[in-house]
Length: 114
Length: 112
Image (cartoon, rainbow over all chains, first blue to last red; front, side):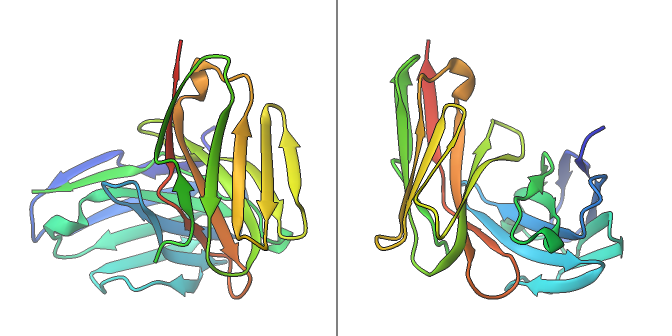
């Protein structure tokens, strides 16, 4: 009964490949996010979706494309992977209509590009 | 750009002592939140303090907020080995969609 689940937990791939990370939440939240945590532990927002609509799109290369098939799922597809994409990617969710509510995070996907 | 900056970056104390971590930020905020991250895991929400609040308690946690100084502190009393983790402050800026801006975190080690 994990609240926010991401798959895979680890992803090792070569430069130039395309990969996807999946995220699902069973909290009934209406808003989902992707955050990137670099090797220095900085955590930076990438995207946010509310009821399947993109509401935040930070300065992220267009090789990154989020997709939200429904409000319980937010997947992240990355094309032409580069070494600098190596990081831990976190999915999170919140309930927007409760005001500025806390985020619930998944356990992360550690992406290593070689 | 990072908004919250935690201080210190690392803190090591003995079990039973109190741990204090500080966070500074730059813009006007709606609220400030503290999260804990255990090694290899996601962030877990600890406490949220709104911009019109000055202090908040939750169990062994005490958070203060000084909007005039744009700073917050997290105090963990009577620390335990299980409190070993990284602690992050996150600011929810006053305008626009909810977008938490995180600091780099404080790495807290509790020595038994």
